[in-house]
Image (tube, rainbow over all chains, first blue to last red; front, side):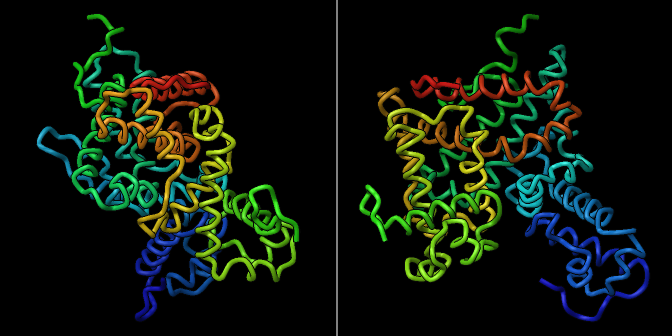
Length: 210
Length: 191
């Protein structure tokens, strides 16, 4: 995975090479399996520089996570109504993989870094669901985000089945659209079963009166 | 070498069960033949006797994983896996996630007995329903259940919620969502 070429020189270049190396490695290994030596080797710099610039691998891995989150957020494209497209994380597999590796090795606490996308999703949903209980809205956005992340993590397992062995592209497309509708219903706190049937409901939950 | 009730050599089955246990904890590529033999308490030489390559082993482990879920947790495919079990059983979600992280089901004709059994339940519970609805619902249920244990802690903290204080509310809402999805395909589900 090493980038090759000449080794980075100067403080900025070395720091950058190390953070980029951390971001790459996090998508392929559990954080606890990424040693300072592996980071230095991947970045093509001297091992001592990990400590010199970051004080150790912990701080470097944090910056690596932040880098992944930022690059994911930067790749977000908003549609005409200013919303992110459904399942946009399919374009950022490294970010999803890094979250999964960290969580599966019991290091989910390492992933609590910047959350520009989650923040935006909460803000937009709170606006749409103005007047509703804020904790409830946050819980719903959380569940929708689990769905979104899982759609991306398990794509390699799920996609062939959705398309019935890769045969049925039309069915796959229809199911994909339905999954997007379910995702939307989850963050709006609506009945996902109704969405699964392809029906749209008004925004507000029936239990909430004006 | 003994033979288990399915007619499979029991040391082969022991190796596959050991593979499932180990791959629930760490990625398949990091599970060595020696670790596998030790976990299964069988002779190391048998690993290579039964499995030509690591991809051969992984394919067989996936097959065993699916048929075990179907036979045990789904009582032969007659009921869905209880909600609590999927989100707390590391051998279900941990195995599935590690397989997905290392490329998932690269051969497209691989069977998905658990998904198919759920689809069968939908066809029975909602007889006039539409196939897109059924397939999307099964996919959504599986994704939510497998994704929950992997991502819930990250999401909860990222949203400014506290897993200790708000855990009950979050869990309740999550199970309600799954019940609504199951209900849309005419299946009642145990927690």
